[in-house]
Length: 159
Image (cartoon, rainbow, N blue to C red; front, side, top):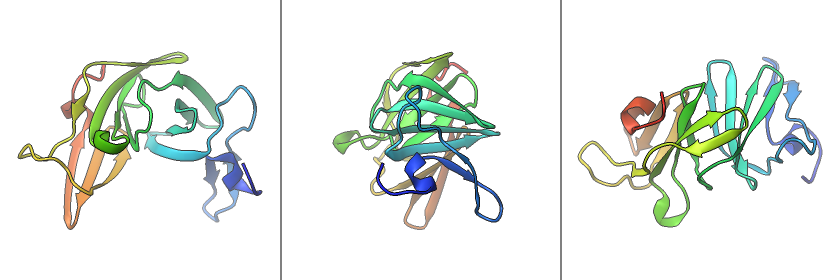
């Protein structure tokens, strides 16, 4: 990565006074983070699936864990039950609304169930939405309307 400072690590934790407290390790054993496509915080664990390697990585306290290459590349949102499963949301081009359930075991992440489309309660597609995740909750904002759903309602995630 170009430059210097915390941004060159791709993932950082800061103190209440915005001083760097922890920086993602830049070592060969961990995948590099060039752009953090999807980030979630579940309890005390941060989860990310970053560009370009698209590995699912979790960080608890100061310990990062590489769960391996994600079964879906390009997701811009990540839901997690904080332990063994979750779902990647969205992707490139026409796959902008794809939901891909996954499960984790040690250093492996695999698809878990069928992919589906994320749609509005009336079945219509979701145009130009902003999505945010916190643990198992997905928040979708379209204009002035805020929708919320959770991992359990999105399908088989090996709860």
